[in-house]
Length: 375
Image (tube, rainbow, N blue to C red; front, side, top):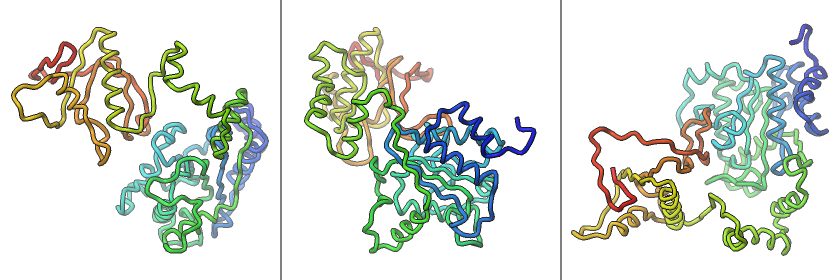
């Protein structure tokens, strides 16, 4: 606890006693606390601290934000931060929320008084994984922030005149879904895109972290990641990657991985069903099928094994990501396909293990095969 007014040096010293910061990370922390501890009046964008923190994966962008948040806790200003990300998984990783959720940004709904009241005290706005924020979304973000923090537009600022705005991410990673990437130059045909580009151009503080932290001890993998990022993989790189396919690992007598990325929906469901049967058989358990809605053939005699396969059938187009029922057996691994509760880490891509299913007392059970029960 400080018994005198904290200084940038004293805060930085305490932060570095808990976080090992490299030279560039230290410069960023120092600059941020210079602004926080010695604030200035915000009238124009030149008065705002608009920072883009970039760099490849593993160079310590998120680590730097966590160190910054620790520093804010030292000076009792952690509540000044609105910590967000463009995706639920990224938000959960930093302990924040999606910017849609944080700003109550849902379509064209106006800002509610309760939202303004909840966010009125915020002075620092952080957005992680900015590569997935399109120019159109950037304009929406700016408009929303203005409506919350500067509804009368009293100054020529962006993002409601917040003193500090930090965007971080790697533009060589995923681009926006259905939007125009911030780095795109062909924006002259659209006023919205031009407005988004104008907002982005206000970020006059740019720091690109370059020292690899996550793969610091694996130079081979580090080099491969760099070449993959710049699309300059060598034949040797490709050979190394091919040596790690499921087929190659099984051929060497290794256990295959318990998960894989599969692009085709039907193949994914076939693999999942096969692995579910193996798992249930290994643990001497039944597989319970909880249907939502599905079609069955209009015939009197049907092979139950074929029926199960048909129930698992999905298309490759449309919004449905899988079959319209849940196949359950105790202890099976699952993955969430949408953000359920970001603050609790229940986000798209999170993995978990099932424990049990609680059935209604009057539920009817039908045994299709020795392994399957429909409910």
